[in-house]
Length: 73
Image 1: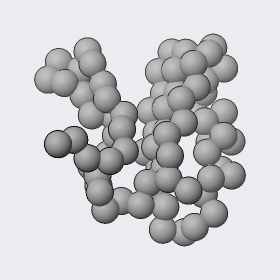
Image 2: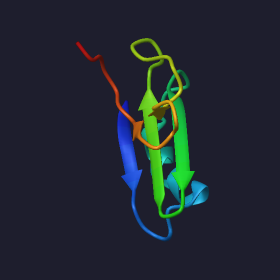
Image 3: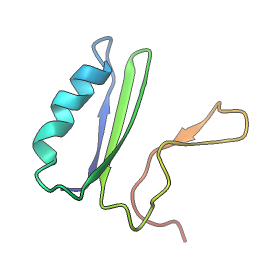
């Protein structure tokens, strides 16, 4: 099922994020984008056709990031 998962704690590691995302991946065609930093883990489960670009999307100097699913009009 497509969706967005966000973990905010000292335990937000890549392994913890993978354990949270695993139950949502019941179809082989789902794609997962992951991002982890100190105290933050984000993952986007998607079909790959609305927003095929890897997430998160950063601004020019990588001080801001957006993690989303869908379209911006």
